[in-house]
Structure formats: structure tokens, C-alpha cells
Length: 53
Image 1 (spheres, rainbow, N blue to C red):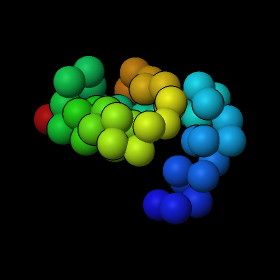
Image 2: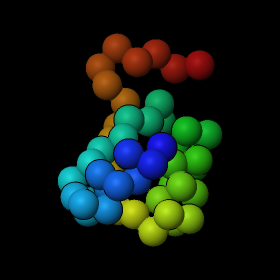
Image 3: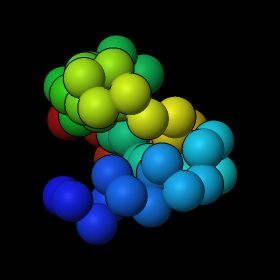
Image 4: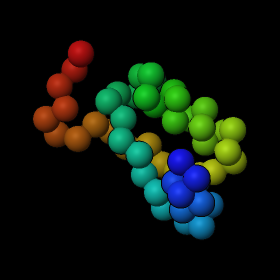
């Protein structure tokens, strides 16, 4: 986690994280992490082939 946050601080807006869908638990948790750590990362839509629940 420390390495991820260090990289996010060194490259604001350049790191991307995958989500299974907008507003899902993973997306929400990552947005909370971004806010708590004060980092800027970009969420991406699901990859092709990522089935719904």
C-alpha cells in the first residue's frame, strides 16, 4: 500500500484503477482511499469480458 500511495503522489492523475462498475464497492473504497490519502488516481470502466454479478 505504501508503494502504491508513493507512486500516486509522484504521478498525480496518471495512475488508473479498475472497477467492476460505477458506484460499486471497489469503486467506493478506492474513492475513500483517494480522499483519505490525498492522492489523485483515475477510475476506469470495466474491462471487456468483465461479467456482472
